[in-house]
Length: 144
Image 1 (spheres, rainbow, N blue to C red):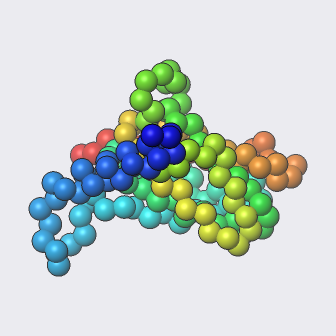
Image 2: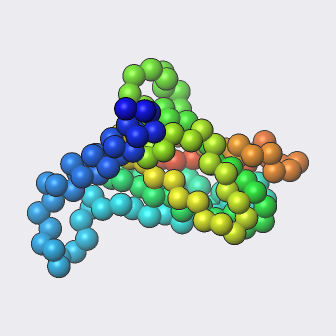
């Protein structure tokens, strides 16, 4: 099985496994394990919001919109300061290294956070003089 297919399969398997144990009635309140959608904007050397806070095990969909020009999104798969060995702390539904954020065109990035910690991200598409300072953080918090 190729790596893209394997990562996609693992993402949806994780999401299914997390939701399978839910005792929420079909017409009841939304389960804590449903996909959390977070709208993120990119513009002139900043991401908003930042930091982005999520919970371990809860599937996440970041919906990026670039407001001014083409930017990018690249995030570390391991928490800041952690050894980059073993299973990554973030499991993505695709294996793109740099997500290209075209002006006005929404880009969806899906993942399941598995390890608590702070994950740094940055713009990976040269976007101007302030490109090097276009950074953000994703904070994965333990459930509880």
